[in-house]
Length: 370
Image 1: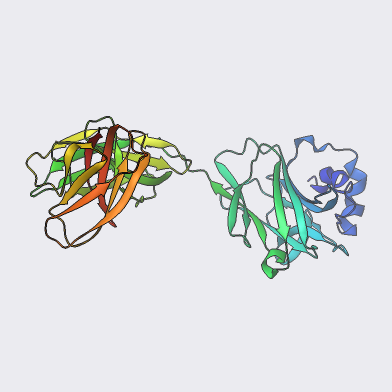
Image 2: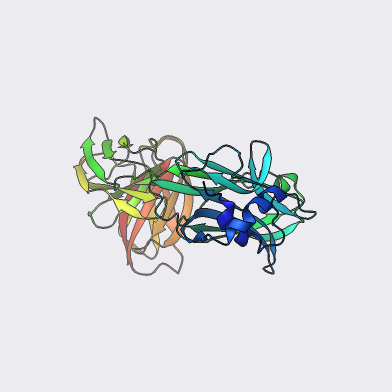
């Protein structure tokens, strides 16, 4: 069997700070010149200073002829008088680790010691691993509690800060994990309905086919089917490849046609919209009315009707969604009227006046300012 160090020792020895045990060097140096490393599958990790000076490094080679247990194919690392950055397995520190081909669930454990405080650059270079199918690779930082993706097709560059906090200098701070890739189906809404319930509510239900990449849902409503605004939001519940069903009750729908849609925001920031559905609820007792409408002289009155006692918020926005007025009113549970004086910044045009509470939007009415 060819030893892994027959291929990689010439490369390792080019870095003076990386040391292997003498027994491996003596046994393999003579054979090294006869072999080429171009066909070896390996992952090499090296620490550099910000000035580009090599600090230390290690290497893992993968082949079906090697064992995952420590044996003569692995190179024990000699401790440097300065900084050390090796691999750790079965209570031993290694300069080179020989392992079976990568499979899901494999883990590489780094070992570092005697690093001075400061900023370092960690380079993780791979060779002949791009065809490793179905595997994700991640670098885990136990100190920062972060996971960073590691490409198996290119060199990866990371910045590392070592400070006076013990966790940043921990010997087991870093490790690499290999996990099975999860291929999610494209996200889609598989259904949405809007139905008037008894009383004044509209019941919305929607279904999704998977939620692996879902970050947030916004329930949006419109009076004309064109201009939508959010009336509530909810977080994903299922977080898996199957998805499921959701329900939301609009307790204060518009006294006319109500157009609804669901906006999903993915973890990458992409917006996905459901189909638009409608529910007509004419004849409701409205919680708020505005008069005069059109508004003249920048003064109008808001009549608060069927709402429970408490503090409520009024907001006025233009067609671009820009806020031009914000205020609050207090209801004692009985009908009350409140006079609103708009500022000089409110020009002629169409606006939306929204009544809301801490729980969300209650009612929106369109007004015209003359």
